[in-house]
Image (cartoon, rainbow, N blue to C red; front, top):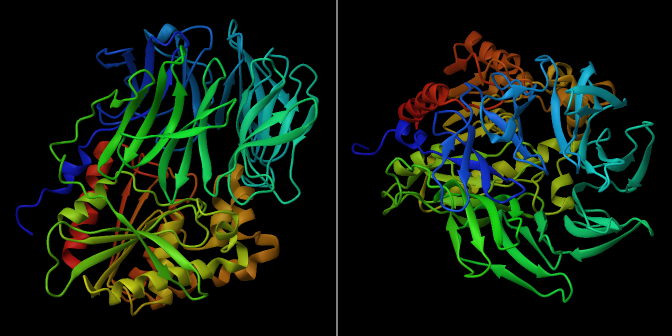
Amino acid sequence: MAGHRPIETYLDVQTATTPALAPDGGLMAFVSDRSSVGQVWLLDMPGGTPRQATRFDEKIGSLAFNPKSRDLLFTMDCGGDERHQLWLLEDASGEPVPLTQRPEVVHHWGAWAPDGRRIAYTANGRDQAHMDVHVMEMDGRTSRVVLEGTGWRQVAGWWPDGSALLVQDCSRGMYDQDLLRLDPGTGAATILLSAEDGARFLSPKWKKDGSGFFLITNSGREFDGLAFFDLASGELSWLVAREQDVEAFAVVPGEGRLAYIANDGGRSRLFLRDMESGEERQIAGHPDGVMSNLAWRPDGSGLVFALNGAVSPPDIWQWDAASGSVSRLTESDHAGLDGTFVEPEIVHVATFDGRDVPAFMFRPRGTPPAEGWPAVVLVHGGPEGQFCPDFRADVQYLLGRGVLVLAPNVRGSTGYGRTWQSLDDRRLRMDSVRDMEAVGRWAAAHEEIDGSRLCLYGRSYGGFMVLSGLTEQPDLWKIGVEFYGIANFVTLLETTGPWRRVLRAVEYGFVETDREALESFSPIHKAERIRVPLFVAHGMRDPRVPPSESEMIVEALEARKAPVEYVTVPDEGHGFVKLRNRRIIFPAMAAFIERHL
């Protein structure tokens, strides 16, 4: 494999994400990792030169402009611990100032009030397991709790006149929400939307006359659609009801048109819809990939969005209404690798119960060797997630080394409707592992793949899938690679961040009532079946899957003198975002694969 670029080159590919437009339209903020970790950058619109606005050693999270000024609010945690604090960059210039200074508390960003004088957010300072709603007066920076409650909740917006808040109550789970009207003066909360069969109520955006709001929901449907909620009647009416999830939308300031993003088997499609006639057309001219952060320019002259594709690393793009053209707003450095990236194709694999598992197949360039390519089966985390064809430095590196990558969306994945997503819930957990086995055996029999050289690779819940694959199908896999994976569901639910325990238990099962099932599909109890080399990596500040999950599987393997390699970094959480740490983890992983695959 001489002459191929090292993985460090792929790690040097820069990204730009999370665009936010100032209300005057003349300034865009975004997050870029040009300085090795994602920071706030600013770009004068149109055609300015990006300039760095923050210089922290920690990654920036959310961005939100004051609706009446260029004051920019952003969030930032410490070492990936997800205990975000709120910061303010006044007039998008100067030095940022902290709005919250309780590093032990999770602060989840919500929304600016319409007049720009208040903000609302949730935080778990009273009790780590519960998110209370806070309102802060920006003049004096004083905050007060306006709603105490149980479980997870998040602020979705304000009433147009600032008299009330829209709050998502997720205490029963992220896919079984209530949408509340909360009076911040009295603390009175009333349910606006709920569903007996569970539903999500996302991204509400008010109609200008205050008669109701647009939102994304799957209430009574298999897929997320775009609806309008009428306050007077309390009824939902559907605007876009596809056999695909609507993932984001934006209404033009004059309300004559809207734009929305649909999930087409993992790839984003961007549509324009005339509000009066209902006519639609798709916007073309952009690369394939995943779109997010969709917003109209304030004058309605075009759209801004983030795009992340397999051959198009994350950048900010724009669509111009007058010319109909699509172009990049940011020009992130791709480390000289343009033209080498590989786009996947979609394949379908028959599984044990007659259903088909969709999967993205990335083929290396060139002709496969006579014995076939070695292959990596890459299983996403979540499990309520979806592998999509976005840019992955590790995937593109493997392709450059002549390794085929197959990324399935086994049952439990989002993007294919409620039914597929629910087929692995609780006691059905191991059915997703059977899907993965079907994919592995399909790969082993493929004429272009060397079935004796299969690697199973996953992160987080995908790490659980790796450990399950190595214990349930030990004859199938030659090596395993797992990052911050789950070894024991009982200990995970007992030690994960208190604010997310119920959210996870709804999916996996509750320790109090489902202990036997949780133990039965926990790989730690079958670790003696792992017979192949295993690579494990973990950030020591991970609040989701504590490092103890990796430590227990590593200790079990070391006790048997089984081949295992364990790499940790002290200042990362659930993922590796700092370039210096990525330069530790990924070269070690690459060397492991090189030795054993």
